[in-house]
Image (cartoon, rainbow, N blue to C red):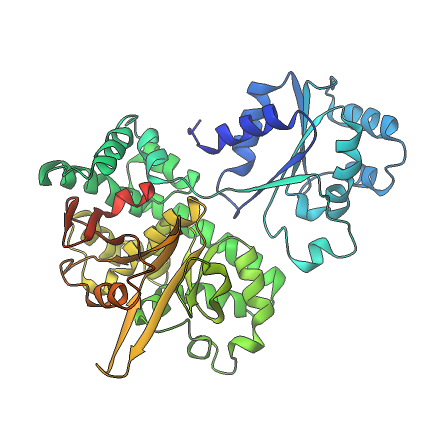
Length: 442
C-alpha cells in the first residue's frame, strides 16, 4: 500500500465532521482515489460498503430512484452487498459517483439521517450532464486529490526522512552543497520520469524497468483519450490534450487553439475546454492582466496555458507517436543532459507541485514598447499582502531579465522573487534560488 498524504485529510474530516458532512474527493482517473478510500474504510470503520457506480448492478442503481424510506434503502443495501452496517461505525462509499447523479443528490437526505458516514469519489464531477436536474448537496465537503508528489514518491522507494531535512534547509535558507543537491536531484529526475500515478510507481518498484513504466503511462493516456471521445466524438478534446507539450514548447502568450484545430478558436471550443479542465487531467494557468494581491480578480480567461496533471504522463505524451526504444528523453533526463527545448518538463512539474499545494495557477506576459521585447513570468502566487513571482530555469539560471524587470515594475507589490533551478539553494541580490524539488515548501 502506497502511503498518501490525503489519508490524514480523510482522518481530519472523520473526526471534525462526525457525520455532519459527506466528503467528495475529486481528481483525475487512476490517481488512487478508490484505493486510498478503501484503505481508509478498512482501517477506520468497523464495516463499510463501496458502491462502484461504474459497475453497480441495476438493482443497486435503482435503489436511488426512491429515497422516501431510508430503513428499506439501508436494508436492501446490506442484503445486496452482504455487509452489516452499524450506526456511527460504518462508512458507505459512492465510488465514481458521476455515473449516478441521483445518488449524489441523495447525500442531503443520508447525511441528515446521520446513521453512517459517506465518502464520494469521482472525476468529471462538474460536467453539466452529470449535474443536470439534480440538487447539489450543500452537505458535501470537497477536496482535490492529485498524483503522488515527490515526497510520497520518496516514501515509496523507502526514503522517509529526506524531505523533512530539506524543509529545515529551506526555512533556514541554507545551502545543501552540490554533492547532496546532485543526489536529491537524481531522485527527483527519476520521479519526473516515473511520474506520480500509483500504477506507474508500483510498476517501477516491481520491475525497475522504465520501459514497462512507460507502457503503464501510455495505457493511462489511452484511457483518458477514450474518456474524451465519450464526451466529444469529434476528437477536439483529445487533440487539445495531445498538443500540450508542443504548445508549452512554443512559449507563446497563450495556448493557440487555431494551431491545433485550424477551423476553431477558443470561443468555438469553450465547452470542450471546460470539460477537459473538469476532467482534472490537465492544470490550467491563466494570464494575469494586473498582477496584484487579488490574483483571482485580474486574470484573463481568454489567455491560458495547459499543463499535464502528472509530469510523468507529460514525458510520455512528448513522444507518444514513437516506440519507447527510440526515445532520448529518458536517457537525457536521467543523465542530467536535458536540452533547453525540454525545459517545459521542469515548468510542468512546478505547476503540478503548486496545484497540489492548493495554489491557483497564474502567469504574466507583457510587451515593453520602450525596450521592444516580451517579458514572461512563469508563475505568480500571493502570500500575505504581497505577490511572489517565479521563473523556472533548466539552464542559464543566473539570467532572469523578465523576473528582474517585473520586480522593478511592481516593486511595491512583490514580497520575494524566486528562481527555481537545478542548482543548490542560494540567495543573492534579493533573489532566492531554489532547487526545483524545494518548490513544495513555497
